[in-house]
Length: 266
Picture 1 (tube, rainbow, N blue to C red):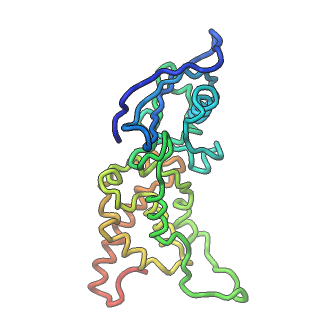
Picture 2 (picture 1 turned 120 degrees about the horizontal axis):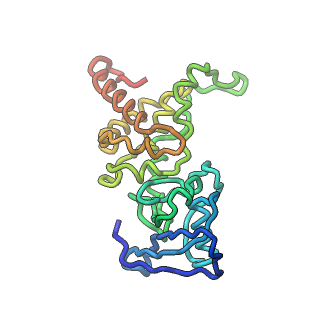
């Protein structure tokens, strides 16, 4: 990411009370069509202890500059839309609070390792393509008719992958991953965690096909096991663990190919 070229301090439309707590929020601003490089603008935002960073950004948009652009939806850490770099760390802005940074200045930027569309909004098209590539849906082992009923799964079988179903596609793990920054073709932690979720599903029969992607040049062996992806995950999916398990499974599959003419993936 290009370093900010300049900083501007902006004053709000409404006067602040002398007793009101005020925090400085430094925001990365960038419009690729007109700006040669990203730049920073600093806003003095009055806040209460229950205000999130997302609410701080909304205050800036409502009272300072209506052109400020960022994503948000649920405000409850469910939709995954409001991810930002907050003081250099990928976080959901809706569950990160201004009080935890006061009285120091807080910096918010677009998520790292993604092209910036405008201000705090990044282009996620590459991430979506990676998700699509892993076939994130159940491909049944054997087709069943409606008369045959649903696919049966035991609690023990369900427990094999339940942890990896909690991903909200916030892409914080991609902003944290150094390998995504170095190699944009790397499938990345969230997509591999989702791939592992379906490979572990007893109802699915496409693990062999997915394992080809796991072992490809874009697959798990790009991972350098830093583990930061799991640290920043707001839902404790632990994508780093999914990547490591997939490495082991890919290695097993490789050696089993020498023993079985049909390959090792099951």
